[in-house]
Length: 208
Image 1 (cartoon, rainbow, N blue to C red):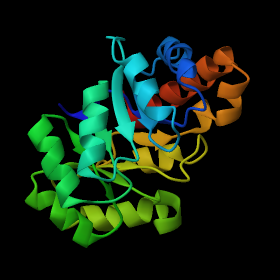
Image 2: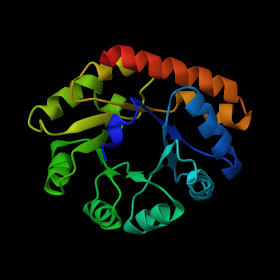
Image 3: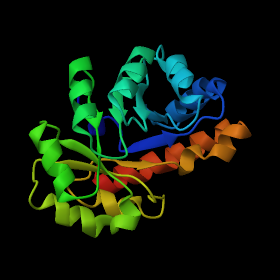
């Protein structure tokens, strides 16, 4: 599975409550986003993934996966891919053993060498904005032409097209369309509106 080909915008979700997961996913689907990364930053993350596991239209991933034990827990809950803030050979190995794609976080050429050794070609760049934005990714891509990058961290509606202008960036990761306040206030219509705008803008940037 090529996770980054699914949708050019990957929302990073932090749930306060697990019961936010399904209405949020439906709001994203209505806006054209059919992939979601539910992080393990809160206790609601794992049950939220479980709630989404039966939603066939949505590709459900787990974020903030930092140990092999996390891999087992999220895959058992129904996650179809895992995303990490950094690069861990142990997490990559366990993901491969469980048969799910891993999108590790990278910030350096050394991280990319670990990924290349594990035959991983889809990576996250985190925190993208603080690392130098598109220029940083372009520099990393030069010696790693096989790699495809998903910038995350500080990416916004205003900056996403700068990243998508790079041929090595098929998708961006962001949270503005799933901001915690929108979830707490159950503003699902606003989620759909922001998702629609993000996907439409991304597809224009990609020439799709």
